[in-house]
Length: 450
Image (cartoon, rainbow, N blue to C red; front, side, top):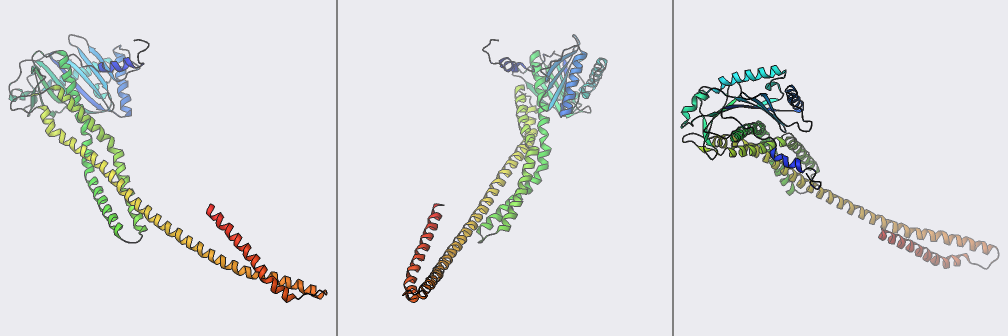
């Protein structure tokens, strides 16, 4: 790497080589199991693979806890363990050699292989695969066998205990077939039988990985299906409640007058409905989103198999289209209903709030108009009082002048108090009137400036 390379260039580049498929031999079995994890079981899985690595003398990478390939037994009877850690599940695949030709049910030979695997783990002092932690969500037994291909389903039915089988040619070369009954046996595994004519080792590894991932993603996606079914009736009830509320609010709009009590009641019911919808979205929205993503990954892995039909036999892709996709459609539709319910509640609430705000604004306008009218009445009353006060002040001022004039007359001055009072009365009244008008004008100017 050069100094001018991006700091994360190697990490970003190496991602395309992460988790490569294992090159498989012509006659091998892949026992792949996936486990759903929570926080505790995730740490248990990491501790399990670290303990197994230590027992085999393989150093643990402190930077990467997501992928490991370990050799329990070397060639020619090799036994490999492939461990992958994903977001919410971990996959453990045991790759073992299948020395005998497969003629009967895969369950019989698998039980013997599982016993030998458990003994290998016990000899290493490590827990077995089923003790690695988490809840098992998928288990596949994928058997590869180099042999002539089958021409019809009846020839392979004995391997699946006489069950109805699915089958197809896989890959563009059509030099391999895929057979399965897609049924859980008593050991909890789904059996896949892949006869082939000189299948490349890397091709076989990619087929095993595609099948294991497809089954894991199918089951992880299906976790949302019971949730979608359980929400069907509550969603229908909530949608009906919202429709009734919308109808009542619409009718209330046409009624004259103010209905504060009904508006508050409707707003409370909408708030309760909104909290229920948000609870569903918060609780299950992520599950539905993950289900949709897993469904797309399943389709991608099935596409990689490049199935071609065998006359008279249903292929795995056709089976998934008819049985799995309707379940995913239910999940997607439920997720859409949740979103639409939330949006409709939001729009209805906004409509009701707009009505309440309009009513409040109308009441505020009426209150302001009433206050303005009261202020006008108070101003008129004040003007009246001021007019009376001018008369009162004039009366007292003229009376004081009259008393002064009477005192001057008693002192010998030639003054007639009545004449002084008569002359002073209009002058004093005019002075007080001018003072009152000037003060009123100043108050009006102060009111305009506010």
